[in-house]
Amino acid sequence: MGAVIIGSGKALPQLEIANDELKAVVDTNDEWIRTRTGISTRHISVGESAQELAYAASCAAMGLTGDLFPQTTSTGWCAQPIDPESIDLVLYATVSPDVVVPSCAALLKRHLNLPNAVAMDLNAACTGFIYGLTTAEAMLAASNASNGGAVRNPIKRALVVGVDRLSRLTDWDDRNTCVLFGDGAGAAVLEWDAERPGLLATYLRNDDDVKNSLTCAHAIEAPQPFTESGISAEAKADPDASLAAADEMLGIGDIVAEGGIRQVIRMDGRTIFKFASNAMADAVGEVLSRAGLALDDIDCIVPHQANERIIRFAAKKLGIPEERFQLSIADTGNTSSASVPMALADAYASGRIKPGDKVIAVAFGGGLTSGAVLFEA
Ligand code: COA
Image 1: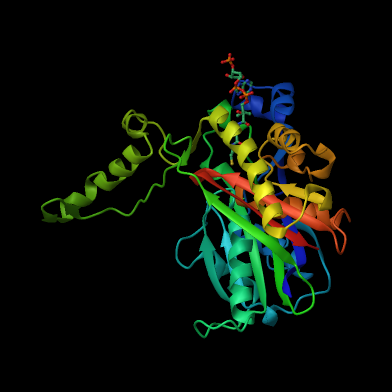
Image 2: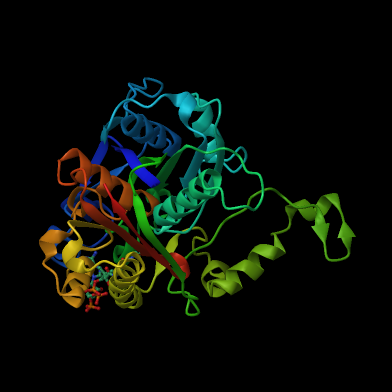
């Protein structure tokens, strides 16, 4: 028995921006971006909200012809159309929520008409979908296994979504970061199956990012009528002192004080590159050992699509051919929480993942988070 993936979908915004088009905002070129990252083009949502993308990806994963947001295109695979009433849990991984209350997951539950689901958001940066799958599997297992503990919500099917609009968090004047990112959404449906094994092992990790090598501050905007000595209506015009404290935590106090944008992604590319290649190889090794399997047993690895060179480096470290990895980065760029579920949807939709295959999904990101999930399709 176990949690089996029965549907997988993705959605991309309409607008596509090729590498050379970025010359309009920064000093860059197609050759540099392609050879250093493997990215040729990325999709940017201008009209579409993240919610619309998440809705379209979820419809594709559930085999529904959702027409609430008809302008968004999606593709996917599902074993058979999934009844919205059968979804008991929605987990929505994102670092770029459209709204804070209700949760984006609650909005998605409403738009998809999932009357029986409970819903919540989670943020584990680019590893969000792996954290989501792991959490959903744990809730499915706890709900369906009779191993004591609390009496829990009955959960038979879970919808796990990863969606981000990194374009809204990108500094479009910074060529070191802006060429890397794009927008999109991916989704998967997990079902508890009494016969099939589904997820065989999961592994999550969090290394402290003591050097602030990958950050994005949050600009909370509601005016505060408080000073350290009490409440005053005039204080609403003052800058929020707690924001300065948060800026210091991320090491961007001076930048913001000098007029720099607060809420953009800042990254030490070389440090992240090194962390990422090692973290990916380590996470693959950990899930294999937890499942008692060897690399030769694995048919396909679906990695976080941040940089093709990171994937190549990890393949070399693991001693396996690059062809074993699903590569989807060329026309998406790094889409953070959406990256793994979109690549998974590509692998399912193209027939690369077949029933019975053993697959590893693996990711890394801000936090510094990393993790992997090993499953039988
Ligand atoms: N176009 C043209 N030149 C660029 C450029 C761009 N978009 N961005 C940087 N350069 C230049 C740099 O200024 C530098 O020039 P210099 O040598 O004259 O100073 C040169 O290219 C090399 O820069 P460097 O940073 O050493 O390149 P790199 O090979 O390390 O690649 C990244 C940079 C960002 C692609 C790479 O470090 C990376 O992918 N890091 C991990 C990022 C990541 O995965 N983040 C998300 C984690 S979830």
